[in-house]
Image 1: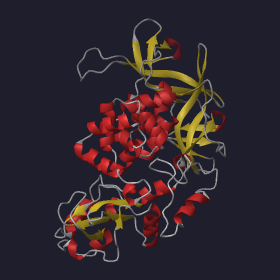
Image 2: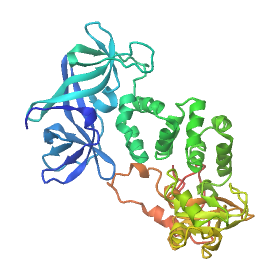
Image 3: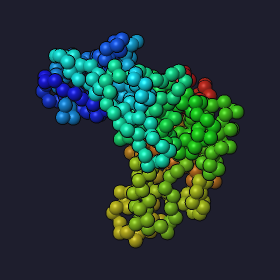
Image 4: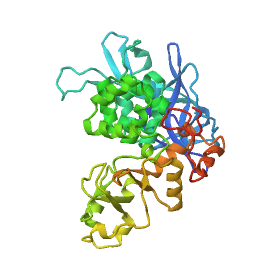
Amino acid sequence: MSAARVFVARLGGCSVFDPAGDKVGRARDVIVVYRNSLAPRVVGLVVEVPGKRRVFLSIGRVTSIGSGQIITTGLINLRRFEQRGGEVRVIAEIIGRRMNFVDGSGTAIVEDVAIEEIGPGEWQVSELFLRRPKPNASPFSKGQTVFASWADVRDATVAGDPQSATHLLATYQDLLPADLANALLDLPRPRMLEVAEELSDERLADALEEMPETDQVGILNQLEDDRAADVLDQMQPDDAADLIAQLSEERKEALLSLMQPEEAEDVRMLLAYEPDTAGGLMTTDPIIVSADATVAEGLALIRRHETAPALGAAVCVTLPPYEPPTGRFLGMVHFQRMLRYPPNERLGTLLDKRLDPVRADASAAEVARMLASYNLVSVPVVDENHRLVGVVTIDDVLDYLLPDDWRSYDGGEPFPPPRVRARLSVPADTTPTKTVTTRRSIDGKK
């Protein structure tokens, strides 16, 4: 392998191939160790393999880095990556760090790190790409960029001094919410909180929705009340309710009072239902139309970018008002049925007469059976007056039925466990016993 210099920020997301040309994963970071006055030595890569598991790939097993791809010598050890003492992640921990120039010429922020091969299977940090502070306060001015060797700088970040996450966020900008959540959870906790602080409200909300509840609470507790309320406003009401339910009563009320009134109202309504009922699982944001709405109007609503696939599978037809709780629920129209009729057809004539809604107090097991029995991705939920209050989607039910730690499942053990399958076979006239106070529980164990 010829000597090469590679910038680490550009490696994030690069495909990793075995010698046969089969893709084995994607590079997510580079691991280095410090060596006194010498430049840090590269010891390996963090590679994300199928199943979202992140594993360690020794640099000695890398035969080529370049042209947007990485070639390895063979099989990758699939043991989950755990950062050891002395190891430093370049993307997660060095990029965005503030450095002092040893010649006294000031400070600069690391924007990228170049690594270079110095021998077969041996790589080290060769240069840093840095940006000096802006020369003035103008929003259009940018600091000068410079290259420097490792020996030319010293770490200027001190304890309690927030590390800029701007450039790390740039590497995350194209990640899907679930992948962003995994990337954040892989960071050292202080760094994770720094990055969470700099994410936009909407982006942080998307990531929180994909995290285990303990991590959600940990991040939310680090946010000021105003920021936390803004993030909760951006979350789906059912996810926001699940998260708020884990907080102390004092913080819960404080955040609800700071949220947008309409968002807080939805969350309060969801918190009023038991967590193992249709009301506790539902979302309050279905697509709701009148019986006079046309097929063209229904399809236009489904096509909206922000509409989740499960919610876009059907529209709910009700009498006015058209916000939950609505007027009397009339029925649902599935999008495939809409595709079979002309654009001017009234949706009130296309209702699925076979599908009955569930009551808000119906058990989660009953909802699961209905979804499975009729091959549905959503089911409408009504109150005692037959007013639509929300819909339960297939992902809501799966999130409830799967173990609390399902997001960290890495394929090493049988999954799902038998106790989850047992929940699906609860007799129709039996309500599962609830033994804990959390909004999501499987068997009473937390």
